[in-house]
Image (cartoon, rainbow, N blue to C red; front, side, top):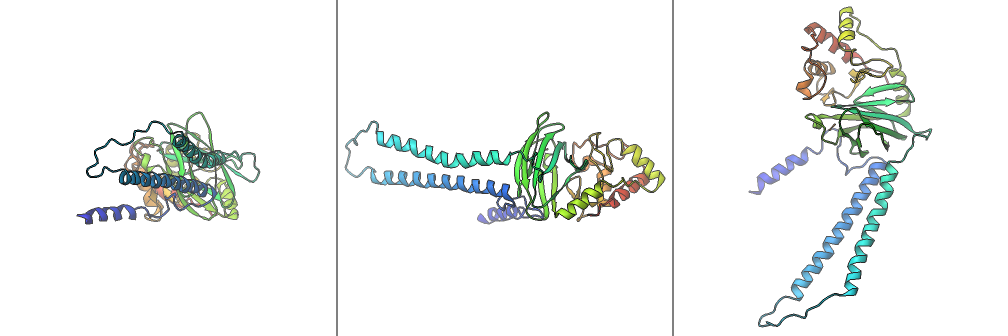
Length: 335
Ligand code: CUA
């Protein structure tokens, strides 16, 4: 009977591996490490309390059990100052041991590095169901792939364009809510190059569970090359008919090149080189072109509730759909 249970558990745990780690138990970088240390501390204190309380319980149950033939009433005790002081002081001390480092970390992680010249500023705006990353020092905006240099403090200023979301890169640190009309602050550091999976951690609508993003940490030289490539003039489709369709049907909401996507849709500069399309269609599983086609054809099929209209709604012909998917798939940045 145990077998199905164990098999089910193995199945569940096997899903915990995956490509990019979503585990907070293998922390990367100082923020995640600090949060992990706090978890260990609090679990240790809780374990200590459980062990001590159960040991006392067991001792009392055995030592003061009713013995055979003894029907006398036990000694009645009312109040014991010494005991009362102990069970008041001990929890206070434990709470202090837990509370002081917790408060220190909470305020430390929200610390403002926006005036630190060495820190990189990133403005995060969450949308149903995608992430926008603006780099105010460079005047560039991107979406879904957060590109950051390693070994630098990254100062995030976070807000939402619609409903409440939450920004979380489990192996690096977080999480923090994004709200409308108020900026939250968080700083993170990425010690090693790599791709880190990020998620929305606040129920925000039907595609909440699909609201993924990637944090891609690269060395400083690659980051500088990426910034330069983002600032290059926009590349547009070569074919005149595709260009016309792209400009009239896509650029009404999206943007390419060095400008903000003001109409509330992701900036598409270099979209073919991103890790995923739409945050969840992996470009190493299917080609970017296949993924883009699938996405543009009907975003609702991929992310229910997405605000982007389907190819049919946009009146895109099959040739236009193919041409735009191909153009975007080949729009990659060198860095
Ligand atoms: Cu956005 Cu959940």
